[in-house]
Amino acid sequence: MDVLPLMPGHDTIDPELDSVEVALRAQDPDGSRFSKALRRTIDMLLDGQNTGRFRWEQLYKTEKTHAGTLIEINLHREFHFGNGDKMDYKIEAWTSIANFLKISGAG
Image 1 (tube, rainbow, N blue to C red):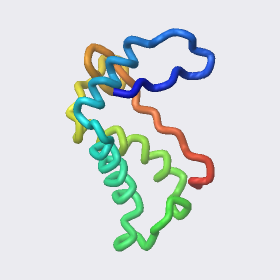
Image 2: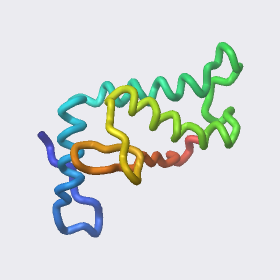
Image 3: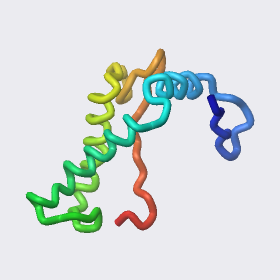
Image 4: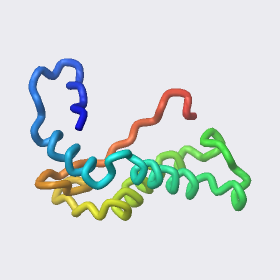
């Protein structure tokens, strides 16, 4: 398994993050399950046949905000993560939060 590079400014290995990565890669070695969950979410939001909207830029601000919640739900469904006590997921022994950032230029 390839090791992810350390984040800038971090000069130590993060064993908690590493164990979450190992668990995710064990369930989804090529990332296809994660990708499909993201695609399902985008399809739910755009749904061009029913809404007439086919691009991210056509969504309302509240719909774009709701995307993060839908991604969290679809990842939960796909991977059957446990519920975290204080955060979104429990993966291995660690609670994790589901945060997704807007990509520059994505509207």
